[in-house]
Image (cartoon, rainbow, N blue to C red):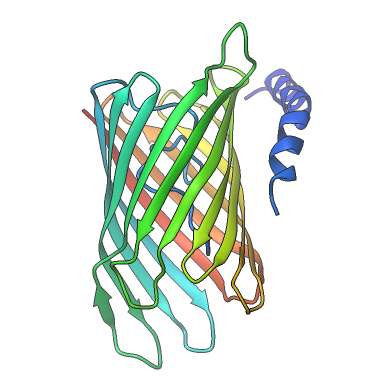
Length: 266
């Protein structure tokens, strides 16, 4: 990217501040989870784009978590996302977590079946001559099939905003209302920027914030950042790699997540 492109990109970010301001007004993040089963654009942040009609994605994903606690806890999760384009602007899908492993200094290694999440995405505004951005609804539910400590999570309402500044430079942002079992209420919001420096390589930078207010307990807040990339190898395969450290937590432990996913479009 040369100096002129950098200046143009910076100018476009400034012009998008009203959109960003709108998004962060809704922030009241990954303890309360984001919607599962829907396609994404960057590492974690989803986009308003949907899987094409009558096509589907299969995405094996893996995550290695290091928890900054006194017990030196390490976790590993593996699963697969299945997403189907049922209409031109509507997709439905599921995340099937088939492995959840935890190990620490105080417990032996425990392996469990992962959680199952169902989600949908409906794009009702498409960027074009009439609109300067795309907007989509998202919603879902997470079924606690991993351990007895996990909770049912309902996500009845969420929005995804996508802004393409050029063919190479884009922004995605989302916010989700989460209702956690036992009367907890939470919000998850993310924002991410990506720039294709090559047709096959998009470096990505993201930020996420989550808030959960358990009934009768102190609220939980998490602010994290993500650095990574997506690599569209061809029309069929996209590789996604990211590192997500917590930069601020309240009433919960800091975590570092290393994630990888392989998206296949059929």
